[in-house]
Image (tube, rainbow, N blue to C red; front, side):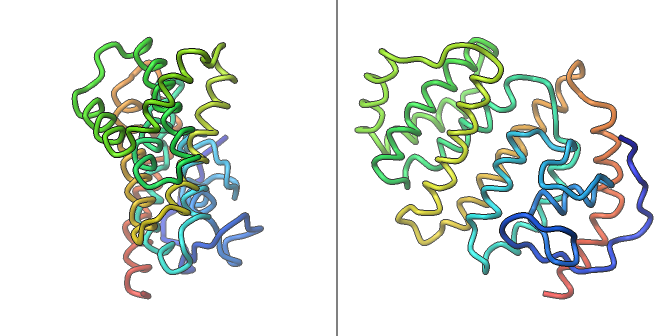
Length: 244
């Protein structure tokens, strides 16, 4: 799909709202505005962003309060062009989401998230044997705040394991991402909006590290889309900040 060059910032102020929208003048969700900036067809599933990251962005957009949603605007340009065929991407996103949600989620969701952490770690170990110390420390910290969920998940995981590849893993990671965001949104914390925003910010960085560091999986069109977005995002965000 060709990328249409934009020489100026949009002639409207972005207003983020939950759900899908027919056009930008009726408002839009996080990923719909990302598709606009990337010069793609207006959609909340644009090809300019990895599907797992786009799912996370849609969930965060919809679960963030109306008051806090506007603070997500600055992150929109950073998801454009962040896509890769590397199977580690969706696993890292799901793992990041589960780590951040585990300490604040309800007991039922904690068990599901703890199983998700163990499952994604196991898959990542097959693809990325030398996991960084920071990620391992984050996992340990999350489990330290939910020891009962960790113990339950270890017993469960010893008996059951997600089998297969591709679609099976994608279903697993999608379920983890949804559970994590809902766990944060419904959790007993007054800073849910901030936690979801930081989750999205961290996941974007995780994805960019993998996508930008893997020349085999890097997409030329994705790089081009990001360049287009960068050329207009500064003026767009300036316009947004002045109106707030």
